[in-house]
Picture 1 (cartoon, one colour):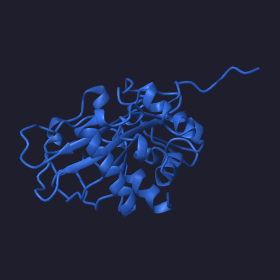
Picture 2 (picture 1 turned 180 degrees about the vertical axis):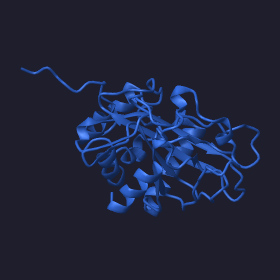
Picture 3 (picture 1 turned 90 degrees about the vertical axis):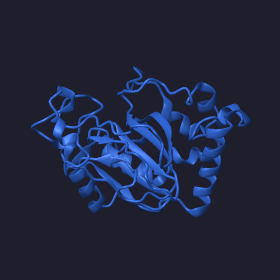
Picture 4 (picture 1 turned 135 degrees about the horizontal axis):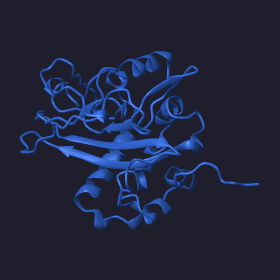
Length: 250
């Protein structure tokens, strides 16, 4: 990350990096996620995940790794990938997506944000690959900037003010970006999905959660099963190791 990107991430709890994927990479991932979403049984078993097969390069994309090593741990062996899912929505769907959660200073090992000795520690960190254009205010993830460091309220303690969760409260911020962009936020930043209202294209995003190798929050996702993990490049299989660090070698 550049110094300015780190400044923005620390200030807001999230950052948006436009046009990270090349046109060829974007098309490859779109094709894979289309098949995975619509006809997964047509894929080889080891490719039945949003980030497997031709899309597995997303796991350790250099732009992502540079960020994670700045906000979780500089040693890539201490990074874990613990959750992944696809968000696909279109305008007019009858489903409520507005469900704000987390936010505020706390001691939760996956939801707490720290700055110590010149380093950010973001705890669980969410990486969003936006595969279609996102128009600001029309359905991208919404976040409360600075909420990862809020001192007077904490969702984990149950005292986050309800009025602040109103979409029109003035505390929420969202983003617009071209297809192939990257959105990264600390899971401790209050955030929510939103109804997709852009009629020009649907939402098509892959959301991945990374954490420190000594911490786990999510249960294992069925799409990241031993068959899928075993089909990845060996270096990428390391992102799915068990939650431990000390091997007790003597």
